[in-house]
Image 1 (cartoon, rainbow, N blue to C red):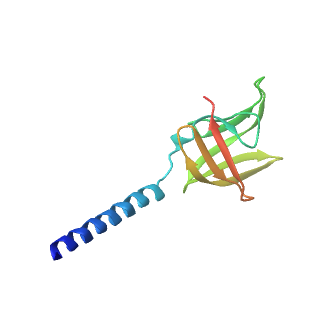
Image 2 (cartoon, rainbow, N blue to C red):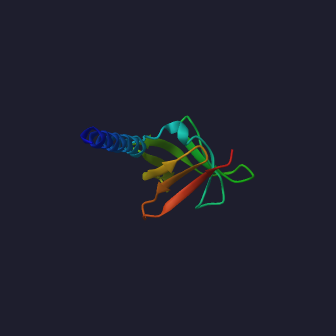
Image 3 (cartoon, rainbow, N blue to C red):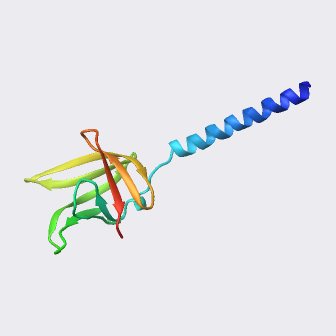
Length: 120
């Protein structure tokens, strides 16, 4: 009976350790720049956002006119958008909440979430 009980404890401990390792792998996931490169539809705008591998981003109209453009980088699981507006250069840092091949989500400065869906 003691051997049976210790075998059950071993299985429970092994399952707990495996669960903790899986959690740490998922929770500790770091994002890569290549997760964000592509053409995206933002939940905040009708005009697609193009994020390039060279660190540039732009929003163009259907006719090809550039509405906004700038530089982007990934730093500590945040996307840092750099833009020049009114003669000033500003950075907007948005924590990445999740990223997959078809969608990513960021937290805005006001606490809201913006969803980007891949369209290319």
